[in-house]
Length: 129
Image (cartoon, rainbow, N blue to C red):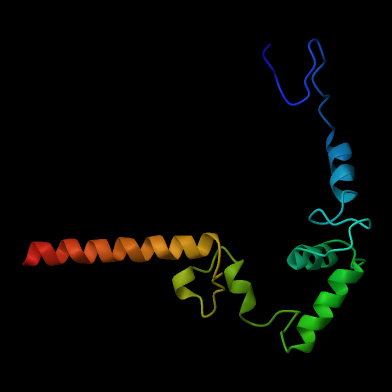
């Protein structure tokens, strides 16, 4: 017997598409980054902070994170340079400040770039010698 999807029943109707309003309501009520009041562990602090800043400043966890970051001396309301990474009019090479993540995708990208540079250098050296 061929399955057509997880838990699919023969003759079952496909799920109805949600309207934009229904989808927004579902997302806004689903918790932040999978966090809900029934889960005691906290993960994705960046998501909690973003929720606090981007919604109505009503996320108490996000507020606590913001206060903690500010207590460490971070300019949480921005400064004269922080806009450079978000401003499409500022080229990366021209920016006086640029955040570079040090893990996951960025780490892999950096490793690949270094590998390419070494390979080019080896090829150039082989052509010269």
